[in-house]
Amino acid sequence: MSLKGKHIVLGICGGIAAYKSVSLLRLFVKAGAEVQVVITPSGKEFITPVTLSSLSQKPVVSEFFTANTGEWHSHVQIGLWADAMVIAPATACSMGKMATGIADNMLVTTYLSMRAPVFAAPAMDFDMMIHPSTQRNLKQLEADGVKIIEPESGELASGLSGRGRMAEPETIFKTVEDYFANKEELKGKQVLITAGPTYERIDPVRFIGNFSTGKMGYAIAEEAANRGAEVVLVSGPTSLVAKHPGIKTIKVESARQMLEACREYFDNSDICIMSAAVADYAPSCVMEKKIKRERDDIDEIKLVKNPDIAATLGKEKQDGQIMVGFALETDHAKENGESKLRRKNLDMIVVNSLEDAGAGFGTDTNKIDILFADTRPALHFPLKSKTEVAKDILNTIQTLSPLQ
Image 1 (cartoon, rainbow, N blue to C red):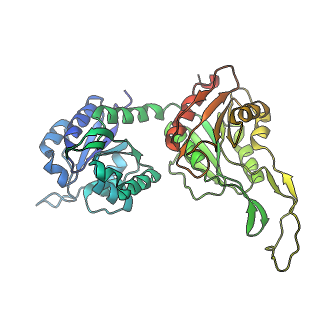
Image 2 (tube, one colour):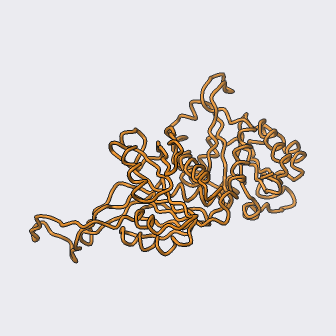
């Protein structure tokens, strides 16, 4: 029943897989959703507006204006009306326009006006799918927040066989259905998340830090907000921007600033996820002016320990609060993770290792293990995109006793 009463914009591009969109439309309507079809001019060469409007019980939108009458179809109003936009099939051409903002048809213009989540199900021939330009556009769309429903492998319209077949209508439908089902899972919960590195100043232009980009923490924040949580994201220096309107971002620089910000929101938090890569040490004093090699004779920089944010908050944790930590290790990952889990009074810890290819700082993927404070066995996950890893982490958090 998660789609009952939802407003779905179904975007259809010009590809042979457009015939599957009819089945997808029927699934949405049968589930109780109200569907507005927006089709590209070339899409009408594959499936007729008459068929689509008969099933949706709405006029199909394709052009900016109705011929002869001059009636304007407002892409802005469609964007405000929608609870989700699903583009299936999403062709290489349309995805290229979406990624670069070329608004020369109603579908792309509607996409650019969309405030609701957008799902795209790519469909094209294998050579087009693997072309660097297509892969670049897919990465850009994912960075822009589009949820890509991966194509399948199999026989293609060209006669070739490979990856590029649009996902089956049932798969697309379930992805959208699951999104709305999950959206309410954390409704009313306050979630505090830390992300990114901290920078500890040496002088006005230099610092001690690490290679964290914040991608994992930001992905968790987006997923928690998608599930209905009110999210406070305390972020160290990063170029990332949280997209979901349910995320309150607080920018900090140093470990002490991060701890101060966390303390402000910790008491009211139901879940606290410490994914930031906090610098363990900071210079004991910060030079007021830039250190000059030609002028300043500095043999050493004395360091002092930074506060351990997770351990500090772990001591202040109240009954019913859930604390989740992270451990990025270069060796003995499981043993070090178990030690941190106990020392910091955590309920669970997410462990990854730089020994695993594709895991760690700056990547779009991660490979994690999750360890628990109770007696349940550890969970092991294969290499996945950080968006998918965020889902695994939150799915696991939701199994912990205070949320049951």
